[in-house]
Length: 316
Ligand SMILES: [Fe+2]
Image (cartoon, rainbow, N blue to C red; front, top):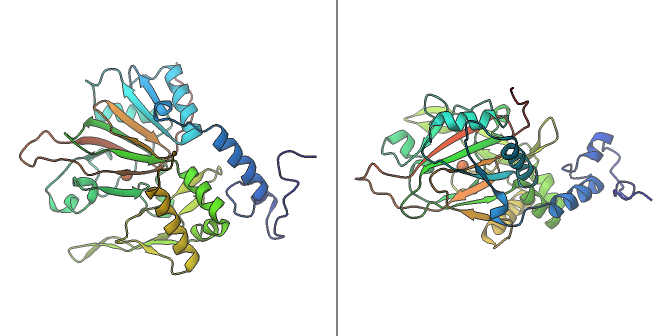
């Protein structure tokens, strides 16, 4: 008798052999069950398990690199702590990414000229209209959910140069865990959220000019290598969910997960010299204190990539 569960699964006739082996395909019950068991068995259960100490971010050691890959393979998120928080430049962020296969930077509307964004409270009108540039609470999302489907964000580095005096705590949730939660609740939730028109972002119009067109797409999809990708925002404003009861129930199920005390939600306030590297997992942020009269505010560098974290050949 086979023990991988595949022989016991009856698939719809329309399912191809490749789909039957894809754990994220909603009809591949056997492949999903096997993947789910492996995922949950190897999951890291405490925040400290997600942390890697780094001596020099410009030159990762073999051990540090291996630890990062090991943690990301299990949780899609790793938190790093620099031994010397003194050198905190965008060069460090870019070099850190390169060593982990993160090369193709996304140049979003508010990024600086070097495509890395300085996240700080700004008074300027354009950036000030986006919550990441205010001190307000930032709801659960994955980065770049409004990007076109050929420019989805698959990897993110968030580096803390200067935390807020108070607040600004992040929470993180592996999007593969969110997928499991939904599929266990009702596999039709996955089918609904894989629809190409499951979630629509209306166009971004500034001063009567469209600076980003309407963008529809799935919440869950897989890339060419079969990795799960999630495109999501919990914002109730400016998000249009497909008008069918299953899609809307799936969106509600996700909100209930975020409101729960799930042990899979990790909460951490980044200190100076710390950062998060992720395969664009779900995250949010609490509000924080900001003194408009002070130049010493919370400052994070954010780099968004079209790549996932991957092993790269080390240069000799
Ligand atoms: Fe974000």
